[in-house]
Amino acid sequence: MTHVHGFADGDCVVLRHKGDVIGMTTPLNAQTRTSTRLGNVDHKNIIGKKIRDVVVSSKGKELRVHVPTIDEYIVMGPRLVTPARTALPSIYPADANLITSLLDLHPDSGSFDPTSGAIPPIEILEAGTGHGSLTLHLTRAIHAANVGIPSAVNHTNVPRGLWQYARSLAAGSFSRLFAMRTPALYADQSFEATPRAIIHSVDVSSKHSQHAAKVVGGFRRGMYMRNVNFDVGNVSEWIKQQIHARGPRPFLSHVLLDLPSSHAHVETAESALRVDGKLVVFNPSITQINTTIQCIRTKRLPLQLERVIEIGPAMTGGRIWDVRCVIPRAVTREVDRDTTFARQTDTDQAIKDGKQASHPEAGGEEPQHQRGLEIVCRPKVGERSRGGGFIALWSKNRTCNDSRLY
Image (cartoon, rainbow, N blue to C red):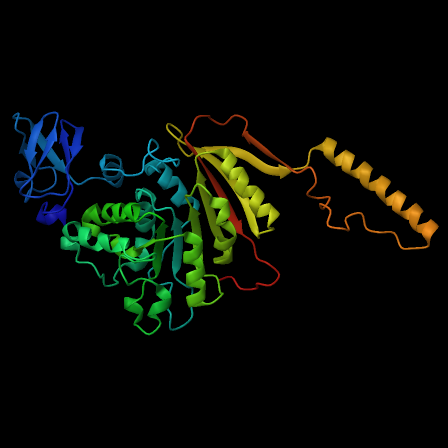
């Protein structure tokens, strides 16, 4: 690749001067240039250079050319979704790494064989594509599973051709960037051509999906693009559409909701989530996390809350919060006293009337285990403070009606 053949038209290049990062170019084009504080650099002078070669700027400064790391590519690239422009904070590389690690992914290119009915493919749903930072980290994490599968994309021309591909996202409510990559549609094809891991990235904004497609396709000549499907539309409707096409059996390995109203989609997402699959919710406010917790509890969904983490600047690994549903002791004593009195009154009245005592919860009253329910929400003692968002992680429990692992 770049290390052997040198930089080519469409590559992004990081410029360094004496070890300091000066900037990153736009996709290389022989007709354009990149402006830096140390002068302009013509792209034609970079094309053909190899990693760590030197180019001279218009001010006579020597700059070395480098392949951008994934962190540099995301941080220095153009962004459409930023905290100043949307109610949701952007997911930056450190946060994306943490979220990806929570899924505990271990892709294996030989673990899935559709002809033998072995372990099904890894399918991850990302709702809220945004800038594409998390999408890029997720697709890199599962890439090993798809090594050797023929790609529908010509990697040598991805950055230049991607603009035409991305425009297709604007047509239709669920228009797909690439028609390939739904494993269920490959039952009649060879094992070598069947995707074993896939990211389904859904966003209501075609503009965001187009931008994210450019971000993923522009990194290292689109080497990870084969692992992603970009869809435009409502995520709950997307899930229902998939269930209608595939059948009721859960098909998602994990679900990530990066949405302002995540609680509105949790029930639908859970219906498509496999047993032991992870549900990750990312919100800027802890109160939004609380709303989702209450929704899951109210609807009695088989999801076990494992942890709530605060993330943000200078917070390596995040800060764990204690978030749980409780009934305060004072309320518990009051409920017990009221219940005892009610039962005694019903019993005395039943004896007088010669009838069976009624149940204290009859008549549609609120169940005792829900009465006075509150949420504890506080940082863990001794943990570091400061952050710009919150991650909540659930795992799906097995229900009595489901004895299958997948």
